[in-house]
Length: 133
Image 1: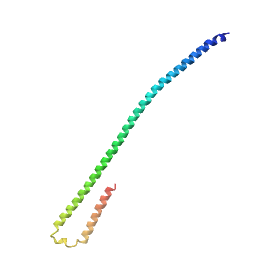
Image 2: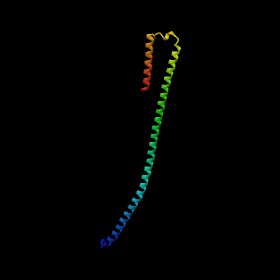
Image 3: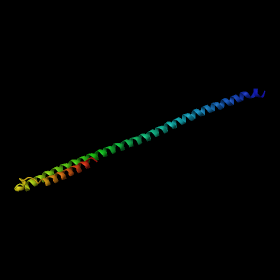
Protein backbone atom coordinates (compact mmCIF):
# COMPACT_ATOMS: atom_id res chain seq x y z
CA UNK A 1 0.00 0.00 0.00
CA UNK A 2 1.67 3.20 1.07
CA UNK A 3 4.94 1.38 1.91
CA UNK A 4 4.81 -0.50 -1.40
CA UNK A 5 4.52 2.76 -3.32
CA UNK A 6 7.25 4.65 -1.42
CA UNK A 7 10.03 2.10 -1.25
CA UNK A 8 11.34 2.81 -4.76
CA UNK A 9 11.62 6.62 -4.30
CA UNK A 10 13.06 6.13 -0.80
CA UNK A 11 15.60 3.65 -2.13
CA UNK A 12 16.48 6.06 -4.93
CA UNK A 13 16.87 8.96 -2.45
CA UNK A 14 19.01 6.76 -0.17
CA UNK A 15 21.14 5.68 -3.16
CA UNK A 16 21.62 9.30 -4.29
CA UNK A 17 22.42 10.41 -0.70
CA UNK A 18 24.96 7.60 -0.23
CA UNK A 19 26.53 8.37 -3.61
CA UNK A 20 26.73 12.06 -2.77
CA UNK A 21 28.23 11.25 0.65
CA UNK A 22 30.79 8.87 -0.88
CA UNK A 23 31.77 11.33 -3.60
CA UNK A 24 32.11 14.25 -1.16
CA UNK A 25 34.16 12.09 1.24
CA UNK A 26 36.45 11.07 -1.57
CA UNK A 27 36.89 14.69 -2.75
CA UNK A 28 37.46 15.92 0.80
CA UNK A 29 40.09 13.25 1.43
CA UNK A 30 41.81 14.01 -1.88
CA UNK A 31 41.90 17.75 -1.18
CA UNK A 32 42.86 17.28 2.45
CA UNK A 33 45.72 14.94 1.57
CA UNK A 34 47.15 17.43 -0.93
CA UNK A 35 47.11 20.18 1.65
CA UNK A 36 48.51 17.85 4.29
CA UNK A 37 51.38 16.78 2.05
CA UNK A 38 52.15 20.43 1.31
CA UNK A 39 52.04 21.27 5.02
CA UNK A 40 54.31 18.30 5.80
CA UNK A 41 56.81 19.40 3.18
CA UNK A 42 56.78 22.96 4.52
CA UNK A 43 57.20 21.71 8.08
CA UNK A 44 60.07 19.41 7.10
CA UNK A 45 61.79 22.21 5.19
CA UNK A 46 61.43 24.54 8.18
CA UNK A 47 62.89 21.96 10.58
CA UNK A 48 65.66 21.05 8.16
CA UNK A 49 66.69 24.71 8.03
CA UNK A 50 66.55 24.91 11.81
CA UNK A 51 68.66 21.74 12.19
CA UNK A 52 71.19 23.01 9.66
CA UNK A 53 71.40 26.32 11.52
CA UNK A 54 71.95 24.54 14.83
CA UNK A 55 74.64 22.31 13.32
CA UNK A 56 76.41 25.36 11.89
CA UNK A 57 76.23 27.16 15.25
CA UNK A 58 77.67 24.13 17.05
CA UNK A 59 80.48 23.85 14.50
CA UNK A 60 81.23 27.57 14.83
CA UNK A 61 81.34 27.28 18.63
CA UNK A 62 83.71 24.31 18.47
CA UNK A 63 86.01 26.15 16.07
CA UNK A 64 85.97 29.26 18.27
CA UNK A 65 86.79 27.17 21.35
CA UNK A 66 89.67 25.47 19.55
CA UNK A 67 91.05 28.82 18.39
CA UNK A 68 90.87 30.23 21.91
CA UNK A 69 92.60 27.16 23.34
CA UNK A 70 95.31 27.31 20.67
CA UNK A 71 95.90 30.98 21.45
CA UNK A 72 96.15 30.21 25.17
CA UNK A 73 98.64 27.39 24.53
CA UNK A 74 100.71 29.66 22.29
CA UNK A 75 100.67 32.47 24.87
CA UNK A 76 101.74 30.01 27.58
CA UNK A 77 104.56 28.70 25.38
CA UNK A 78 105.74 32.26 24.67
CA UNK A 79 105.61 33.17 28.37
CA UNK A 80 107.69 30.11 29.29
CA UNK A 81 110.20 30.98 26.60
CA UNK A 82 110.45 34.56 27.87
CA UNK A 83 110.97 33.33 31.44
CA UNK A 84 113.73 30.97 30.29
CA UNK A 85 115.44 33.78 28.36
CA UNK A 86 115.19 36.11 31.35
CA UNK A 87 116.68 33.43 33.63
CA UNK A 88 119.59 32.94 31.23
CA UNK A 89 120.19 36.69 31.07
CA UNK A 90 120.08 36.98 34.86
CA UNK A 91 122.53 34.09 35.27
CA UNK A 92 124.86 35.63 32.70
CA UNK A 93 124.64 39.06 34.36
CA UNK A 94 125.36 37.58 37.79
CA UNK A 95 128.31 35.58 36.42
CA UNK A 96 129.78 38.73 34.85
CA UNK A 97 129.18 40.76 38.02
CA UNK A 98 130.96 38.34 40.36
CA UNK A 99 133.71 37.18 37.98
CA UNK A 100 136.45 39.24 39.58
CA UNK A 101 135.10 39.14 43.13
CA UNK A 102 136.58 36.77 45.70
CA UNK A 103 133.09 35.94 47.00
CA UNK A 104 132.64 33.73 43.95
CA UNK A 105 135.26 31.34 45.26
CA UNK A 106 133.93 31.27 48.83
CA UNK A 107 131.09 28.91 49.79
CA UNK A 108 127.62 30.38 50.31
CA UNK A 109 126.64 30.56 53.98
CA UNK A 110 124.32 27.67 54.98
CA UNK A 111 121.56 29.99 56.22
CA UNK A 112 121.49 31.89 52.92
CA UNK A 113 121.48 28.65 50.90
CA UNK A 114 118.61 27.25 52.97
CA UNK A 115 116.60 30.46 52.53
CA UNK A 116 117.14 30.41 48.76
CA UNK A 117 116.00 26.77 48.59
CA UNK A 118 112.83 27.63 50.53
CA UNK A 119 112.13 30.54 48.21
CA UNK A 120 112.71 28.38 45.12
CA UNK A 121 110.37 25.69 46.48
CA UNK A 122 107.65 28.26 47.19
CA UNK A 123 107.97 29.65 43.66
CA UNK A 124 107.72 26.14 42.19
CA UNK A 125 104.71 25.17 44.31
CA UNK A 126 102.98 28.46 43.48
CA UNK A 127 103.58 27.97 39.75
CA UNK A 128 102.36 24.37 39.77
CA UNK A 129 99.21 25.19 41.74
CA UNK A 130 98.18 27.82 39.18
CA UNK A 131 98.63 25.45 36.24
CA UNK A 132 96.60 22.67 37.86
CA UNK A 133 93.42 24.73 38.18
